[in-house]
Length: 328
Image 1 (cartoon, one colour):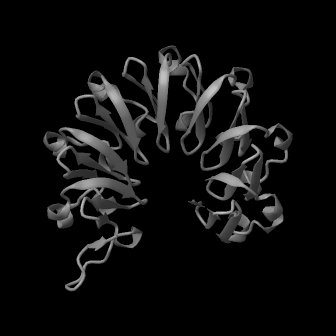
Image 2 (image 1 turned 30 degrees about the vertical axis):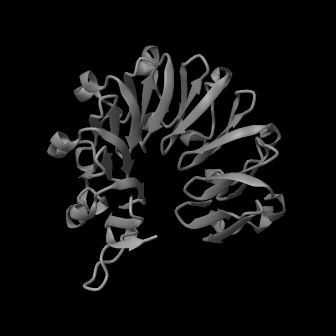
């Protein structure tokens, strides 16, 4: 497993140790905690720090102290940790007993502040770029962090009942309830306001998020989108093609959907993969799609890989001698 932030990488090796590289002050140098990095199970990253979950339930942090690289203020509480989530500036750890511990930038998710007493019996944590949302076992939701990024859910407090899953983009959250309807909050233009499509958000099975938009798949295989229109929030140009959708993946500003017949439909920012025109005739019998920040890669049934999007973001070069696909 490899995790990255804005300037560094951290890789978990097969023996559970960790290797880092990149800008030292942002987590590229883990020598100060190297001896503690044993039997590592998971690594999460903020914009400039890393947090590793070890097999014994302890947590090891390094990188920029302001953005989560220093957990000393809560280290004695970081025991029996089961999951770590990260915003761009802070971490939140879910403990085995259902409590949540946060650290990092206080205003951007690192301080549970007014909600510590409510962070009990938590079963899932989601993170935007600067806020967290926690689902409790009774289906209610607790939020904290930057209000504009979804840290304030007061306006939809009464609607956040029987929540089963929460999806997050950079500035907003979307919660799927037990009745398969959706509740959204956060920055309106970035997906926090689903009012224009609310009547369509029924029988929702899953939600995929780009940086500024959401795409929901319904039980009938249709897709409903909202958020920034130029970054995937407006799918009207391809809506007639979005039938029998099985899976959706997102880059930072675009979406790609696999249909039941193995074909692919894309929309959003063309430079981020929203336009697959140059390889569309190759996108047949697609089994799986993966995404970088600005490009998509599709695995075909015959083992080939077809990619599209921003050329330097993972797209296989196209030349007279080299098609934009490779065999694995």
